[in-house]
Image (cartoon, rainbow, N blue to C red):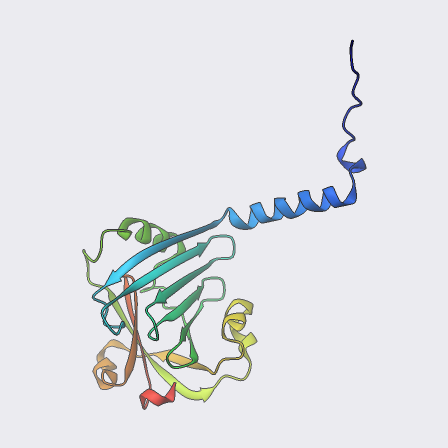
Amino acid sequence: MSVSMSPAPPLHHAPAAMKLTMIVVGLLGLLAAPGFAYTVNISGNDGNVDGSGQQSVSINGVHNVANIDNNNGWDSWNSLWDYENSFAATRLFSRKSCIVHRMNKDAMPSLQDLDAMVKEQKGKGPGGAPPKDLMYSVNPTRVEDLNTFGPKIAGMCRGIPTYVAEEIPGPNQPLYSKKCYTADILWILRMSFCGTSVETY
């Protein structure tokens, strides 16, 4: 006995719910494909209270953005590097504030170089060249319009007191060394945010 089966309907005749499911799955695949995330255990960082912690680095090549999370209790922070708009923002949880500054592309690695550095250092610990130092002076005036820095940073800092920081040239850095909050990016970069007092930001 033979059983005949009718062929499956073409996509344009498929039920609307099925079409919607296929579209959503396709979009999720597109969003997930370009993203890379790495988790690295950190020790010996001056920016951590007890010298230890964990950092995770997420890189999205399509949106040209890197996100670095430092998880170490109250001393945790999150940094977003927006290569598209050339701005970076660091959210300091203990200060309950966001610090925004222009990216120094001579000192900060490109998105591709950052990806390669994280892969190379994952599981190895500190070694090689010492981290580059960047020091910033924080303007105590709060930012009123976050949209100036692009939608990614505006979304991260919205609802949080936000301040702009200007990079301090190397020869002037010692003047601010005792009034700074330091955030170490793996063993690649040491960023210090300095103000007139620690309460400023």
